[in-house]
Length: 296
Image 1 (cartoon, rainbow, N blue to C red):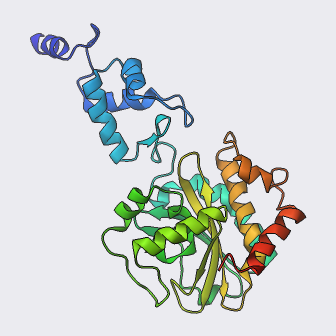
Image 2: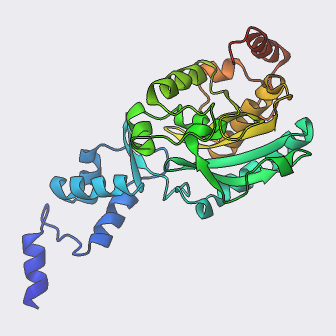
């Protein structure tokens, strides 16, 4: 009977005995968040859990490293794991389910190969592939991985991460798959800047596989990309003409996953009612940019 009393006495906080198990303490911290939009400071978490600040800080750091929590400018938030967005393909059932009808509609409209992917460390992990006439010539498969920096899918997601996180994911060197693959950080960050100035549109010409062109955009979340969608064709396909459809598809998937998420003012200015494609005016502006060569 004396051992439990000693534990309670040594680990007491505000007069209350702390859970002796690390699992229980981690659960307390995760349960302190009311939902995916909740943002808490370290002091908020310590107050809600009644854990000592030092204990809270130590456990929160571990939860961030393991992606149960994430740091945001407004404080800590639930991370990818509890929301079902872990960096392992088997945990992306919700993303695949929401995206499936959008991918099929995109394939029917364009006749091109459509991909859905997520970031898995320094690689792109393919969650879905909807084929067209060109499908057999595209060396991708569901469950396959390729270096993220070599693909439009990967660059579309990496462009919205902090430069330090990108370089941490990539490591000291990047594999060059073709003579067109971007394999140095300086050029890669310049490419990310162009992608952000195009509101996320990402192009790839022969960087992953010779003779193949891609256009992609990220499915954006509140703090980080949740995935990306691409259209794939050969070198003769004018991808600039179908690029707005990719952006529209990612927005629709993002709204399906995060219906409470507010669309940024810049994105809203170029969109019509939810679920609709780009307006003719927005399409004309994007195609005018393509004709001027700013996308290439």
